[in-house]
Image (cartoon, rainbow, N blue to C red):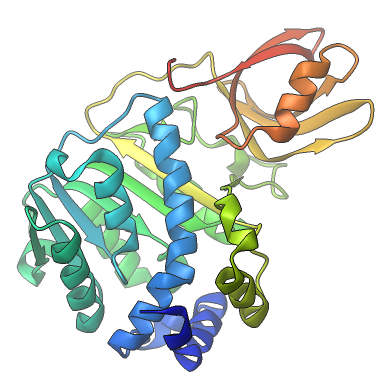
Length: 331
């Protein structure tokens, strides 16, 4: 698929359906052309969100143990391809793909076979999806606002059979809160690897925090802003290429410990002339905290410019942050 070959009627229809939740009411992956156009554009933007999630997992020294990936609701297969490329195709033996529309499963299969010729790639059968055999490493991407209650219940049963799960969603308040509810239901037998730095109930869901939600922002590749194809796409689609909000959840059945010395910044920091303010989440709960610029100008500047996941160890005095060190890959 080339930029000059984009199927714009299909892209417009897909975007309207995803934004309005209409995708849950009938088939929307109608043609290979629609899937290829999506994969090059909206799918690639979803891939950048996955890239950021995977960077965080590397920072936390996490990788899946299972050699089988199950991509549920695969669409064009962008999520599983990002995961395989990140961890290395040699890390896996097989990829099972499923989408409620066969044309999507077939498309994702064909691209995965092309990109990973040594990987066993196939569509997940109804018998497997509805059975009780172990699932392995389950990945889920951008499905919550499309699921009926029955489909969500089926997905929960599939998760219960998984060894580990990565689930990435667009960051609307409603979707994020549903994902938070699901997280709390899965605290046993799973450990939450990310985004949380604790295993308590999600504090965002506590009474009084109704205006907040667990979300983050992925940085798009800087080169797209000088790429005429991406610039034209953003203008034609009416989207802000700079904005990539996402929510996510990573679960592991085997991992049992969490580094509770870490804190997580939700959303973005807000820079004011005398200080930075942000919403901090850790084992003690959710709170807005400040860092005075005068007390630590270097950290003040770093918080404004840091494009990595905002995970820190803080030093505090009288309730105010005085210093902090960002979680880095070598940690």
